[in-house]
Each structure stands twice: as C-alpha cells, then as structure tokens.
Image (cartoon, rainbow, N blue to C red; front, side):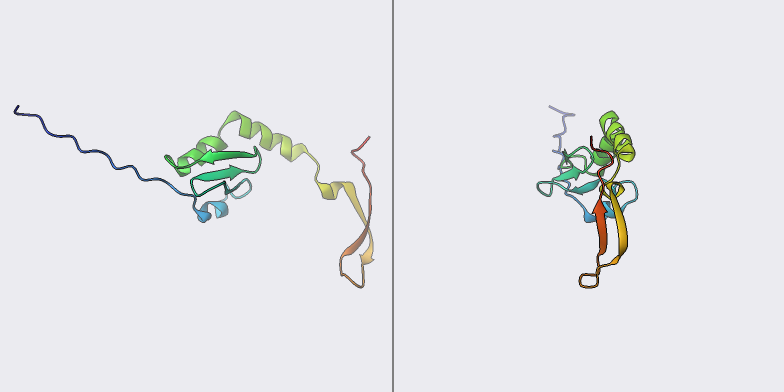
Length: 108
C-alpha cells in the first residue's frame, strides 16, 4: 500500500467570549457575554449567539443579519424613557438628583 499517507486529525479549538469585543466600536452598543463563555448576547435581538466554533466571525454574521438590522433601525426610532420625563426645578438638596414630573406623552 504505497502512497497512502495517514491523515492527521485537525485540532479544533473552542473560541470563548473576549471582553475586548465589548469595547470595539461595531459591537459595543449591542453585545455582552451570554449564558457561558461560549456565547455572546445580543441586547437588540435578545438572542444568544454561539461563538464556540467561529468566534468573532459569528458576531459579524449576526450583525449583518436582516433581523438584527431591522431591530436596530426600529430601536433608533423608538423613544427613550427620558423622552417621556420632563425635569423641573434644580436638584433636590438632600439627594442631589433632579426633581421631575413624569409625563407619558406616548401613552394613550
């Protein structure tokens, strides 16, 4: 059996979540660590993304997905909680927090 060379098995390395990803400009607004070190959590889609096999590439693929883009656009249009609150007067002398009156202008 000349010519047959035994094949080497490829070693697979499991990718883990890196905290440096939370500081990268393209990820920092929507990513956090998921349920364990092999997952990242998308705050926009509320979805765990497996990074065990493809690592950072899985984040890029998720970011480019149609659902993630759609949810990001709708989130930008949505008002924030501070948009519904009108602050009046100076800060409270005891706590230092501003005094405010809540106005629910988006509620019916």
